[in-house]
Length: 322
Image (cartoon, rainbow, N blue to C red):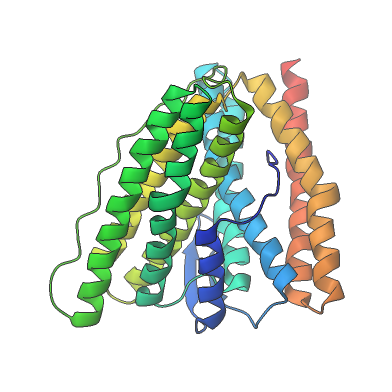
């Protein structure tokens, strides 16, 4: 997948991590076309291992999102096989890689804990992150980005308020879980960036990774809500997740010029997957092993092997286009 600069974790994610450490173990049941797997939150992890798992979750969620976009572009260019390769890989990133990392990190708790995590993250994005990004984009003359960041900040405020209401309903036993905001999907076509400043480009990258993780996290929370017998809460999670992915991330991806020609997209995917296979995940595994986090060591090592296979598959597809 495409790598990004590993920067300081967002305040919302830090809060999420702290909350997850205190969360009790929870089972998450994942269904794919091939299998059904039950995951359980693991023991307390070393801080570095937990940080590496958070990085892995962000990257795997982002891979799921961008590979889906790359697949759509391949379909538009008439490359049917590649149009299947990208989304199939995306589903593996989401339904296997991210889920296992989320389980090891204990990312999900009960419904109330999950809502509190989401409220914290949405509050940060509404009050600080997106407002700051908008101000900086305006200073740099990237007005389209400034407008988008401002719009998303308002959306995140609405998400926070809906989650607060849901938490009140959950804890008081009175009232109704809100209906989720309806997503306004954005088409992401191949093209160059519509922003100029390096700072804006970096902020778009940070925002896209955050939106991708929010989507994946909320879908996990939706499963927990369903398992606990709260379909209305599950619908709120799923609807909000759709906004994060199909509207927020997609709008940011369009401005960032994330999607290019299929050849360029494959080349980008090969480079990213090879980096993760040979450097990133082996490094994470080594660090986990050194502190005795054997399950995380095994996870990172297995993912590294998967990434090598992904790189080979993308390289083969790229060679066939040349």
